[in-house]
Image (tube, rainbow, N blue to C red; front, side, top):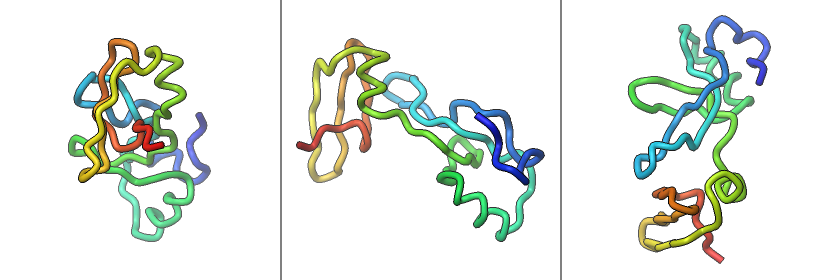
Length: 107
């Protein structure tokens, strides 16, 4: 994936930006912010994705793992437990566990 125009020197190459603690598998991809940016530049950068702080670093996240992608990569859902009060679930795709707010099936 190409870096947003005008931010070539402020962003890393496209890479995994976040991982699920239950499995260690990546769940978000984008660019690490490696250069200093003004408030105005940060506001402009938000049009390309979501700014996220993880493990002491800031990232421009442009893609999150979807449920469909997880099923394709790891297998069908073999277990899903919802914690309704927290809007979070524990879900296992094949043998790979995830604790997530975005991979849950609330239907």
